Length: 382
Ligand SMILES: NC(=O)c1ccc[n+]([C@@H]2O[C@H](COP(=O)([O-])OP(=O)(O)OC[C@H]3O[C@@H](n4cnc5c(N)ncnc54)[C@H](OP(=O)(O)O)[C@@H]3O)[C@@H](O)[C@H]2O)c1
Image 1 (cartoon, rainbow, N blue to C red):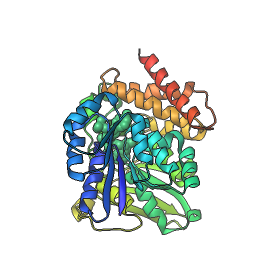
Image 2: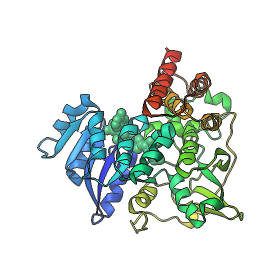
Image 3: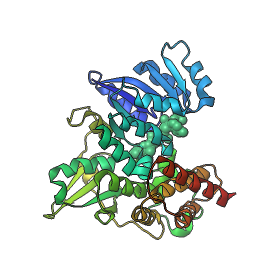
Image 4: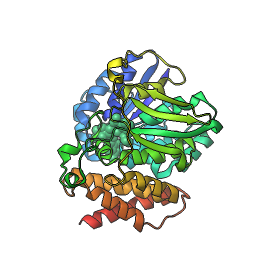
């Protein structure tokens, strides 16, 4: 029986994770859940899954959570430290990392330091400091299981050969809602347009990242750290149907891929039940969805994000943390209607160019780079 701690249970990945858990009551027990502001959703989850403890990251929202959970006998903790406490307590042996953004770094790192199995959807901490997270896992014996669909696909496909036989990987990208939008129209793209993802139903931040292709940019760096691959061996192909999630090319020219409907429950289930495969009753891939699979090159002119990823990745050190933080801040400003869509590219590119890269010698250096980039973006806009 796996005892789960689900970080970010109230979000899109958290809700899908609980749907997988619901399908295997004999395999999983929910030990703890964490949320930030969505008290009603957390209360509903607590009533159904009966965890022993919950944590609310936003202290100001704690009273609302307590009211929503009125009568519940379990423990309600509040604040970012409480989230870390639940991630590292020994009563859970599997942590699902599904908080959005850099806020997931400390609890995910804590779970890795405690030697747990950690299913990671929250890619931003890996981008910020992949080597520190890998080191923590190596020292404690923790296992990292990728939940991001493309990385889960690489993880599965790579098993068809030896690591030394792997020539390159291809991460696919849907292309987002603006795949065919001309450059001049991107200038007037609205938040509502950017939030209309053609194939995936996800949280707001990752949906905007998909519209800018920054999500794929972050995934390039995530793949570099997860699979220990040089950037030259990581490619992106646009595949609007989101059926082929990734391809792995081996030295003999064979290409092995993983296919499936664009439904995050499939990679989540694989990460939870690994190394087994179980029938969770998820909808199958049918021939109708396979009739027209297309692939195209990404447009680096309209969407410079992938270039930023290769640039930050090759610079190394604190550059990926700056890329991530500048983007998080720019996306927040876009979602608050304070900047136009294309300004996200400018703010991220400018932060990356202005940053004096430091070696990744510890968490404090990463957090300082993160703060620097956020402040810079805020100053530029104010
Ligand atoms: N959605 C997908 O299909 C998908 C696919 C691949 C990878 N991912 C990655 O998975 C992560 C989660 O994405 P999502 O789409 O599920 O996001 P989401 O729907 O926005 O959910 C985010 C979760 O994080 C919590 N949260 C927000 N700010 C927090 C903070 N400061 N401290 C602690 N918790 C906080 C939210 O709590 P409240 O809701 O209570 O405020 C919620 O539970 C992201 O890193 C994303 O890139 C997502």
